[in-house]
Length: 202
Ligand SMILES: [Fe+2]
Image (cartoon, rainbow, N blue to C red):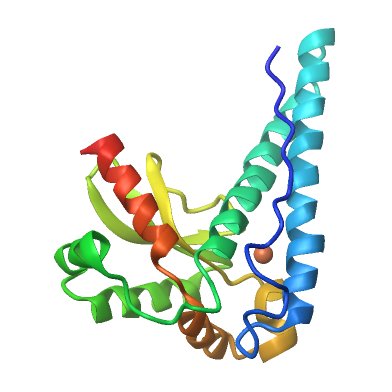
């Protein structure tokens, strides 16, 4: 029987590397406590599912499957979030991704304005995704980690707007945090993910 064991990768930079935009304290809590919690939650839900399959009692499987999508999406999106920021970030996308953003949204500014609207509306995440049904980039509003997904979409840029992501640094001023995110956003990983999506789906 297939059984994955998910693990938390270290941050791709030091905990204080994104200061002053995101504090060392927030990155420490966010990565070591919150993100670790989703990894643990995913593993534990998988264990429940495996045990239930073995003993033929599926009474707790419905809830465990919910825990897989909640915690699994939390793990997947945090991984992307860490990778789409860096101390060298803060510039605009280049190359094929930049061209596709201009094609699908009209301009970088139109994409960014819409992405900021997603970040303001979400109770979870703002995402730029490659929608493999429509073969286009789009922004989506995600509540929690998994509500608001469009099936077949491949995440390209993820911005965490849960309160644990910004409240300690910015209080209720989520817009200031979103502005700070754009000072550290790094489009190298998103470009690679975009190329991967094009290769898979076009
Ligand atoms: Fe988070």
